[in-house]
Image (cartoon, rainbow, N blue to C red; front, top):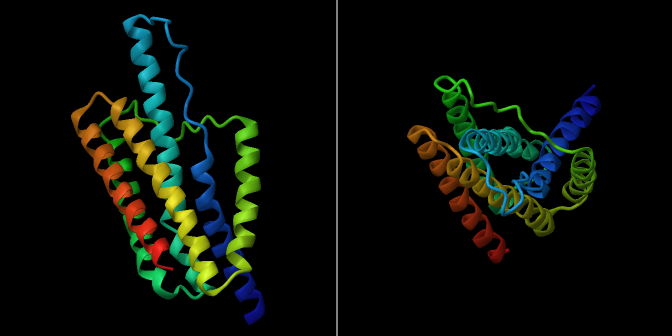
Amino acid sequence: MKVQGFMTAMALAAGLAGLVCICGCASPPQSPRPGLALPPASRDAAKLQLRNNAASLLRDLLDDEKNVSKIFVIKHGGDVKALVELIAATAEANEHDLFQLTNTDADLNLRALDLPPGEKAVRDAIAKSKERELLFTSGPQFEFNLLLTQAEAQNYGWHLAKVAAENSSRPEEVATFTRIGEAMKHLYEQTVREMRQL
């Protein structure tokens, strides 16, 4: 029974940690071709779609990130554990703030991922590769691999939040997306500094 519980915990933690890295690989939402002027109503609809897609990808990333510290159920975190736990706690708080925005804006859809099949297949393949890298390494190599996934995720999230802010019309949403982006930028910079010290 203990072996089965350990294997379940190992699979859960590895899956969560592996999924974190895939978010850095998504293609940015497509915008209209340059030079084509859209009427105001179409421009507003395009901005709304772009905002919702970026916000949805951000929510999906934060949902993964809030669980990243669960990897330490089966792996020793060493010097990077505190930073990864901070990343997880920050992601959980940021996800909560995103859901709070939906209480005042019925047009804010956090489930508009709109991933093409090819993108989804690539994400799944990368997740499997990263799972192996995290599961079958230890010590400094494991710490480096984990920090690399976090640097990719924080950089991606920072830019998703920036795009969401740039395409939001409500000041409170702009402020929330900007704050989330700045927090993720700061965590990205911390993660890169930590990687340099390994």
